[in-house]
Amino acid sequence: MGAVLVRHAGGAVTAAVPDRDVALVDLLDRLLAGGVVITGDITISLADVELVHISLRALISSVQTLVDS
Image 1: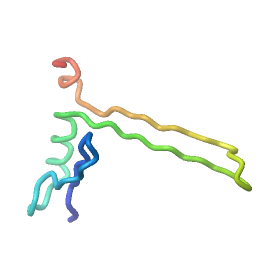
Image 2: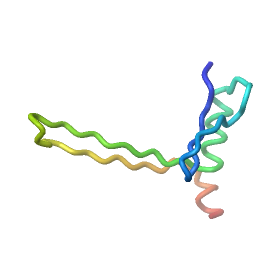
Image 3: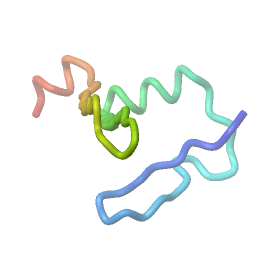
Image 4: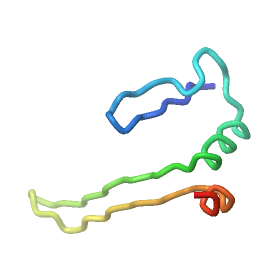
């Protein structure tokens, strides 16, 4: 099992739980409790001409976390 890494707002990357295997249920519980933002960009280009550019943004959180905020 691999390590879970967290990227902080300043850009620093740290291990979420150092020296311990993380079960999928624990990972999902941690993500839903605090929420997570997933971003990504996909660009398809031909001869340095951008044909398609897709920006992805997703917020994943539990309903209870959003209501409490």
